[in-house]
Amino acid sequence: DGAALDFMAAFFGTLARLQSIILDCQPSAILTSPKLLGTLQSLPEARALSEGVQWLSFEGGSLNGAAEGAQCPDAWTPVDCTPEAMALLQYTSGSTGSPKGICVTHQSLWQNQLAVQAAFRTTPDSHLASWLPLFHDMGLVGSALHPIYLGASCTFIPTWTFIRTPLVWL
Figure 1 (cartoon, rainbow, N blue to C red):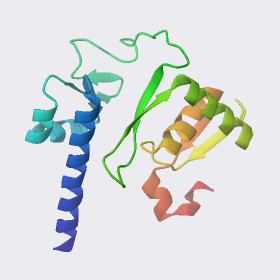
Figure 2 (figure 1 turned 30 degrees about the horizontal axis):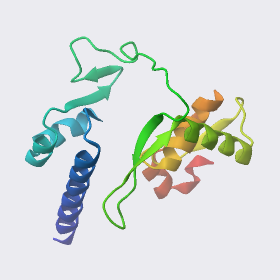
Figure 3 (figure 1 turned 90 degrees about the vertical axis):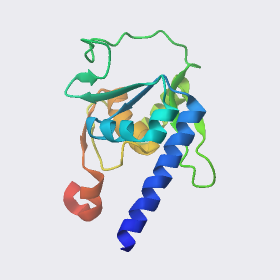
Figure 4 (figure 1 turned 45 degrees about the vertical axis):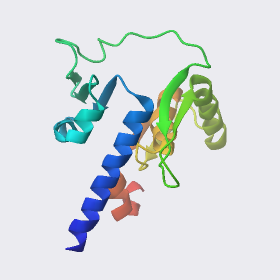
């Protein structure tokens, strides 16, 4: 069956990409959804690569796999940082080679928010809507972080819903 072969190729390609990223960034923790946590932990390749790494999942305000009694957001402690400090590590798609980790600074995120605000003339009174996937930089920075930066609201439309029925957002 062609669909099964396509799935297997995508599955092993994704696993190879995950291995590449784990080897590159050497994380101290891996955060995923509860649904994927068990699947990822059951893969011998993922277990071997992530020895000593804490596997975490987040659901309903609880951080599963964390130290006993740890809850979010109460367990989080703000960190003092400089504009030049890394805010997040973003990986390229790897479509032309191995995925590359890009350090995005707080200053870069701030400048991006200012640029988005100027381009779209958004204000705290704006209500945004987005169908962009949050694993893409435009979805994360433009759709998820921008309303937080503004203090505005946003309606998220599932990406596949928008692709199947684009007029749903009107």
